[in-house]
Image (cartoon, rainbow, N blue to C red):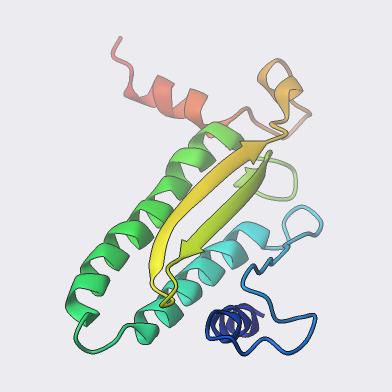
Length: 151
């Protein structure tokens, strides 16, 4: 799926879009029940798209592109634990269940190089802050704060 989306984007940028499925803007939607691996799949998608983007860099620009590329990719991937601290909690089915939605926009240059990303969160499960079902926990951040506090 990620490969097809990236290749369609590149064909459209090269002027080769010939059908309704080939446009420069691409969307991959991950949905499913709790605990089915959407968050992990999103991480792999981002890593693969970043890999494809590196492959598109011309030999003369490869060193510069890879340095910037690594910075953007690292920022995207390193934001995950922070977002998980504030928006993930233990549930009956999953010890690290996302309790919010996440929209990730990855931007590419006209040459296919990774240019940046934006992550927007929404729909945080607010009642969990006050009460949790039996066998469930509050958001990870509260336990992390308590673990780091001195007496």
